[in-house]
Every structure is written in structure tokens, then in C-alpha cells.
Amino acid sequence: MSVNRIVLCQGQSCANAAQHSPMLGRLYYDNGSGWQLVKLIRFPYPFTGWFDTGVFVETQGIFATRWKLEFDVNAAQAPALGEFQVYASYPVIGGNIQWSFDGGSSWVSGGTATFTPLAAGTYEVQMVASAPGACPDTARLTITVDPCGPLPVVQSVLAGRVIEGARIELTWQANLPAQWARLERLKDAAWIPLYQHEEGRTFIRIDSFPSFAQPNVYRVVSEHGLGQLVYSNLVSSELSLSAVGGEEFVRAFPNPMSDELTLQLGLRERALVQGVVYDAKGAMVAHLPPEPLPPGLHERRLRTAEWATGIYFLQVEWGGKVHTLRLLKMVP
Image 1 (tube, rainbow, N blue to C red):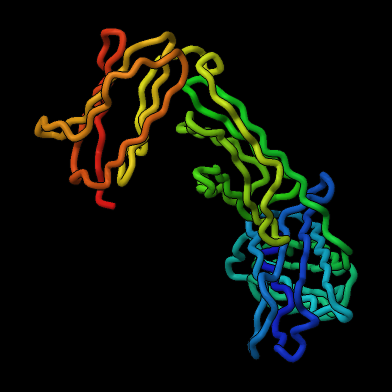
Image 2 (image 1 turned 60 degrees about the horizontal axis):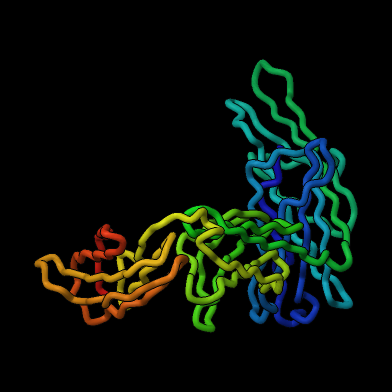
């Protein structure tokens, strides 16, 4: 038997709005290994309308016999505790399913049933499934509803390290499950989203195109049910050719491009570097004049806003070798 849906503070009007916001909650289940936090719940804004409303939490697929909901309300009077919806995980052919929420004194029939606790406490849900020619199948579920006091402080760690290929591997961990977590990089005084991770407390992400011309600074913005949190534990990673294994390479991004193209080079030794960009007809559209460059990582930018949509070829030459990349210009 599983808890399928939880609705908090359903059916309240704006006359009592001050008593209902903000409301925070923690939902746990126990499958025999102790209480496991499955969800943090938060009302995103105060209630201001004369209509039924609530927060719906889907938990289908988690099967446990013990559930616990802790709630915290910053108000003198707590709102209605809401409702639980339970369901049978298998059909009964030719029979019926009955539910009781009061120790067997009264029963309701159906594949699902809704239970509304009237006060904080522990409640037992009973289910009896009957089919012709078979013994009744029974199940029990306990639901505990309790005030929890202040919710815990979210602690997180964002770490980065340089890996081969002049890339940066970033690892994020938090002590609470997040509804989402977004990795961002600081570029030209603005935070640029790189990656958004749904439903989890950890992720590992590789930034394949970090900058060589400015420090790479990252942060995580996350939603834990406690509001949007911008973490202050920024990660700054510096790249050097020795740190990435002394690999020689040339790469260009974004590809496809729009208004700007970034060219990156890795040189093991000092070299005279030059480059040129041709369109599909062989006409030159950009030229990088010969430039002596020391060993290390180098970055150049090309404005491509005036280029026509289509295919281009970038050729970069040093040390007697020509490196060619195929590029695609897209409509902005």
C-alpha cells in the first residue's frame, strides 16, 4: 500500500490567508531502514483568492507501511492539515476494496480513498481486499502528523577540478534533496546557466568549454522547498597546459554559432600561429594574422554576427601543421 498524493491546506479562503503562509513541511517514509526524507514542501506565495487550493505531492512508486508529515507554520493558528490519498497497488477482479481510517469503526469502498486528519497525531489506515473464493487480503499503513519546528539549514558543497582536455569537472552535494539545482558560470559580469538538474541532492557536470581568458567562477542556484537559494560557496578554477596534461589542440565554440565564435588553442611550445575562416564557396571571411604565442592556453574571439547562415571552415596553422574545424552559422 502506498501514499499516492498529499494535499496541504486545502479549501482555505483569503479571509484566513495570514494564517496559511508561509507553510513548510517535510515528508518521510520508513521501509524498515528508518525514516527517509522524500520531499520538502513549500507554499510559493500567500493565498489571496476565494477558492480551494493546495500543494500536491506525488509519491506513487514508494511503498512503505509508515509515513510521517512534519509541518511548520509561521502563524499563531495552524491551517487545516490537508488530506492524504491512498491507493491499492493491484486490482481485485470480481471483488472490492474497503478502507478504514478509524480503527475499523467505519469503512469506505474503492480503489482509492482520501483521509483528512483533524489534528496532529498518528493514524492507522486499514485496507481489506476481498475476491470470490479467496481469503481477504489486508494491509495497514500508519501516518504521523506532527509540528516540526524550524526546518534545517541547507548545507551544500560545490567543488571543481581540472581534467584532461582542458575541461573542468564540477561536483555538487547537499544535505537535503533539491527540487532542482542549476549550475551557473560567471561570464562578463553576468551569470550564465550551464546545466539544470531535476530532483536530486547531487550531480557531477563537466564544463567542456571553460574560459582561458578569465577566471572560471561557478555557483549553484537551487530550490529545496525552502525558497530559492543562491549558494555563496563559489568555485574558481584556473586552467594551465600542465594541468591538462600538455595536450596540443584547437577548438571553437559555440558550434553552431550565432553572433560570436570563441577559438581556443593549447600549445606545448612557443609557435607562430595564424588562422583563416572560409565559407562553403572558398571565400575568406576572417583572418587571424601570424602571431608568436608562448606555450600554454590561448583564447581569441571572432565576431560572426554579419556572417551569412551556412557552413564554414576554420584552419589554424602552427609548427608546420594545419588544423581544420567545420563550423555552422545559424540564424540568430
